[in-house]
Length: 422
Image (cartoon, rainbow, N blue to C red; front, side):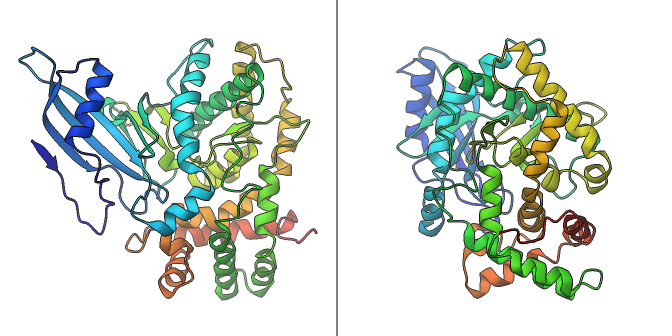
């Protein structure tokens, strides 16, 4: 029996048509090495709502099955991640960034290697979901459903408190360390990942980033606390935001480079909580935009999308110090022979990439903390039609975003980050 749980069609993306009982039965037969295995019950339902993920479709699968000769059924829970196969516009843009190829390679080849490395450190821990199957034909990844082990998504509209932030930085530092070591042992394997959100191959996302900086300029003009001074600076910045952001992604000789997650924020981790609702563990998910770059990419992205404002402002220095300590400790555990920056060297490297904090604050924060889900899809972000313009403007009605920019734009300005430098 196949059960398709139908949520409101306007709120959820449908499961791919090929994801059916025959497909999953053949998959299970391969995984369990049992050609006589048969499915007795199948439940397929959406795993994420619109607004939670702009780059893929997530489907939750529950399978009851009988092994050959068995009388009692067993059960498996999987997450199936696929692309927007029915949306030619979205598919065309995302294909420029090789998102499917990148993530399939990550889950099939790279993340298991990172897992093996972290297992050899003094404090081994789980960083990623277990990969069950990578399907290149359908551009799909099937991995363990972390929800079964009580992992959940945090509330993206609230953001991380100090305890969550430290946990997120610890996990990120270990991934960065494992990547640096893996690339040292297999030179060039990870430097091939070069299609992050900003890269030297495509500017497919340019309409969105440029237009959103324009919306930010309009907001500043209408905001009594900001005004024309900031509106003009942001208007001028429109023509340089892509280049300045891409420079942050360019790996620099003599700096510490690693494979960055590329989209590290609240919704791309899952958390397990204790009885007092304290965070016990975190796993990283969504590896579509990994690229060989500076850790500044992930850190500025994380702080400016996912960390509560007061903590980001008042405790960022201490949190960077904590991240650095975990990074260095993990590199030492794995006998890394490459360049390991001192804390001071690392802070200077982050400063060289701080323009990315501007981009993330103006653009990424707007979509990732959006609470207006009616038109929250990729087409609304990217297209130059009336619906797209209205949606981008709507993003700037978010009070959390407005309050943050009222505070941060003057700080960015005093640091020279809003100036055109070339």
